[in-house]
Image (cartoon, rainbow over all chains, first blue to last red; front, side, top):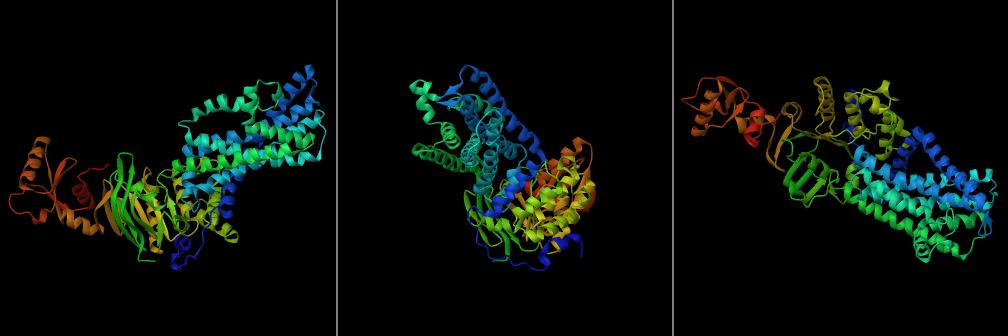
Length: 275
Length: 298
């Protein structure tokens, strides 16, 4: 028997086992993520470099620069304030950008999604797995500013162990947000609008570097609708303590944002992946 | 499960104002190589996408391996392999990594995955290149990998969308023998092509598609006999002479076509009397195809 007949098993009729097909099958999710892991295995040095160096630069610039004129904010050392704030920035950058660019490149340029959707994988599984992978990574990278912060005087605390979870939930929302943007973008250049008009203001109006209590009321109101603000608050309360009732609200906003963006990503990209 | 591996009844697919598939009826029996022959834009690729539910029909019924689409498309995709027309390999991964990811996607059980990948590498003749990144492979190697990727889970049905488009003759021959041995081992193959020779050599049954529907179907020999007859008379001459023959044939109602530097008159065996001088040759599938679609290809 030649190699092909050996490969194509029809000579010994394989009766397809009656197989219940579920939504969001674990095997499908792990298959998609195994691809992400294989690619990460190739590119982790550059990904990790940018995820660590970027928050470090913010930390240095604001902590040392701004901290020299303003040593205490909201009764905490500015280094503590900014190191916890930059966690959200790190999570945002390591989730929204991969959400936008990876999705667009794999879908439009490499056509990887087309190839994968010809297998027993549906759009919901594909997007969920991609988003899961990005947000797991974002949760881990969210720790980078804290580790760097410790070198600059941030006091270690047990609450830091909650940060990867907060980063994961926030990252899930922003990765899905990135997928939504990719789904509606006409070209990859459209991302520039989102980066400058949405993402940059978003991380500035989040209480990352300065408290929003100094803002005019309008901006304060806008901040309340900014998921990143809630991420910052939650991280700050978890790391610097104490956690309170308000944090349940912050968590609820993050979970709500993540669920909303996740479903929206599936609907919008689904429409474009399936003719 | 019925006898057909694939069944489409009245399938319609529109993209805006364009109707790519226009009331398509198609039955592909189990275990044969079925050729979908048609000019570019006839709706072949859209038909392929309908079968994986990557395009959803606006009307009509579609069944693949007994599963009703799109509701049971995931089960259908579990048992079928797809080789797309456009190379969509992951350029950043190695051959082995790509095949492993697809073995997982096709739910090959973990203990069998290594063997499945090895077998696919052998099919693709890429064992020595297993650890090479796809970006560094030649065009022919990439196409073989693309085919092997679709066979990793030993599917009962394989969809090949223009499998040899743009390949040099040697690679094309290799793929043809691969497709032939798939069929020989009992796998149902649905292959779209716009190469007549490919359909003639490989397909047990050919359906000719034009403007989104099947306009003729049969074995290559049946199609030739029905639409081009046994003999074709090729009349050579300078352009004005060819124009005259063209006009004459039209006047007499002879089925004919321009064929390069000649006018080919079909069904020559059944025409009596005042035929012009020319060379008789056996009719072929290209004659039938042109007679059917009125279109020249390539």
